[in-house]
Length: 474
Image (cartoon, rainbow, N blue to C red; front, side, top):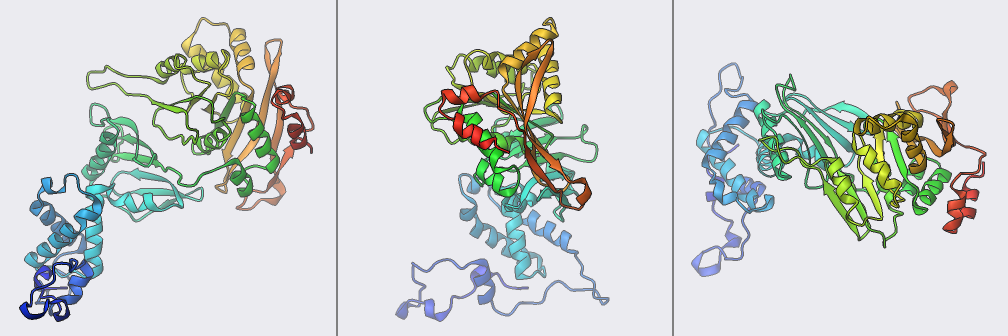
């Protein structure tokens, strides 16, 4: 609470420069808290009614200060400046508006308002603190009044709120503009990414009935490896070893699972075993893969423009990637006609390629691949498609987010060939849950199949057969 402009408070006598009484030039500017502490006694604040209720509720008070700050701010002064560079100016403006309007606010509220204003200017408004929380994996905005997060595999409703739907739309448009895309009434859906690599999907009204929807899959700042996943219980140590050998031996791998099951995270972990001398081309809608190799070319699709022209699809990029002399092609997600081109690439010398697919089981994944190839080439006979799949795909790794929030690899399935018109598979590892020990935590074991992997001969070519057979021991 204050009544005089804090910036004009006299500096303490020990900061004055001897005889002339002028403050030394090297004295740093006072922070918001220091200004508050150095201020004289506050003048009376806005009068209150006799019943003790405040004239302005806190939301109205914050709105008044926010409007006053933005009205007094020179937009050109903020161009090219960072958050920390603008912070002192915003603090001063907040103090000026509060004094002019004679508003009764505390120091903590001042700090909160300054933080909100800086988040609006340089971040994503009220959800900016959620993006900084490393325990949160997803941020889900359902209109201005509902913001959900996923923490440890479970959804929680937060107390974060936007001012109104226009505020949500403004944040969504800022995200899209950051990657050269647009989202408005004529193009109400967009996929984008944040500066840190987090994946974003936006849906605006009228498609989103209860207000603009923003779904953010956060970029993991931790380097997730197969070893760490085994330590966390996402898989067994034997499974991690076999997957490492499969990637090293340049097997074509498909990661299958549902939404939010951890497919991209697993794909990143598998990519760690790509040789540093290999040229890898990645293709995604919104670039989020984090390959650590030195020779990586990342391609990203482009939506159509306002005239409905200029779209570049995943299939276009896969076809172009084949002309870029790749050793491996990694497709973030296969979900359409590009499946045909991916299989063609896997069958034409690009061993070690990887992709993800939405499916509940490895067998469902094969069926989805068949359907997507038929979308691209409806005249191909089903038998021909199955033969292509059987010869191109070596591994399907099934991952699932279970009811306790833990992501687990439930099956590692190997495609071993054709018998008649049926693709033959064998499970190398399976997660068996214990139905008799029902509790909030899913209990079970990772079982190893007593079979010789079909890629043992290929592992021998890379000098890894003994390591593979050791990892497959029950």
